[in-house]
Image (cartoon, rainbow, N blue to C red; front, side, top):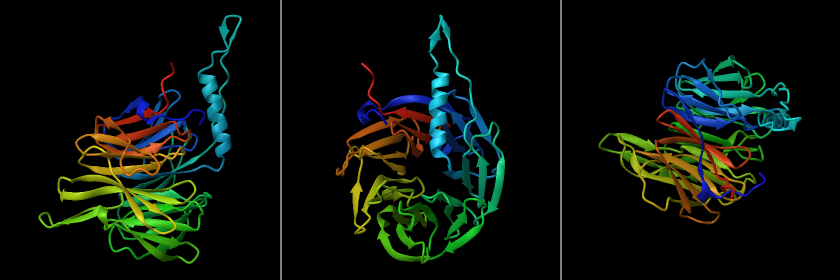
Length: 366
C-alpha cells in the first residue's frame, strides 16, 4: 500500500450484480478475485481486472465460510502486478499500443463450507472451477472456516457444537475440540499458530491451546446474546472474529441490546479484546442504528472497520483507541459480510440485494 487511506473519502469503485441475495465475500490472497456466496447455493467469482463473472456450482445449500490456501503468495502478487500492467498497457511505440502477452495465473485453493456440513476444495484460479475434494465435515451447518497462519491446517465450526481441525493438503481429519454448549459461530487462529479461539451463540469465547488440545481460558462476550421469552429463542452470537496482525488484539462483531429476537432488533457492537489480559472494550457506532455487525477487520494503519445490516447497511470506522466510530458509510442494502483487500486500499461488502460492492478508501486525485 503506497498511499494512506482516508475513510472520509470512501466511495464505490465497482458493483457486481447477482440474481440472489449474497451471504459472504472474500478477496483471494492476491486481490485479483472477489468470491461471494449466494442464497441460490452458488459461489460467484468476480475478476476485478475485467469484471468477468464465473459461477462455482457444487454446493446444495447456503455457504458462508470461505477461506484460501495460497502456497505461492509472492508469485500470485507478482502475476497480479503483471496482469494489471498488461490490461492497462498504454505503452505506445510508433503510435501503436503495445499489448503485453498474458501468462498463467499461479494456482490457489478456495475452501468453502456449507449448511449441510460439507467442506469443499476448489482450484480457485481455474477458468471453470469444479470441486476437487469434498469432505463430510460436520453434522449440519458449518458456520465458519479458517486456515492456520502456516497454511497447513483448516479449522471449522458449526451447529453440532464442535470445532474440527483438518489437514489442508488432503482433507484428513486431525482433531475434534468439544466443550461448547451452544452453536459455534466463529473460529480464528492466533497469528502465533499456537492458539485458536472459538465463539458461540451464548457469547462464550474459548481460547484453545492447540498443542494440548484444551481450553486455557474463556473470554466474556455475553453482551452479544439475549434470550427472548416472547419468541422463546436465543439471538446473537459471535458473528465475526479476527486478530490484529501482531496478535495483541481480538475483534469480535455481533448484536447487543436485543428487544425483538424475531425481527433481529438491536444494536451492532464490536468487542475489542486485549489478548494479554482478556479484557474487552466496546466499540459503538456514533449514530443510532438497528441491526447486526456481521464483519470486522483490522486495517494496517490502525483503523477497525466493521459492516452491519438491518433495513439498510453500514460500514463503520474506528480510530485506534477510540470507542465511538469516527466515520460511517451508508450502504443501500443489508450488508452481511466484509472483506479487506490485500492492498489495504479497498474493501468489499456482500449485500442482501444481490450486489457485491467494492469500495476504495483512497483520496480522490486532484
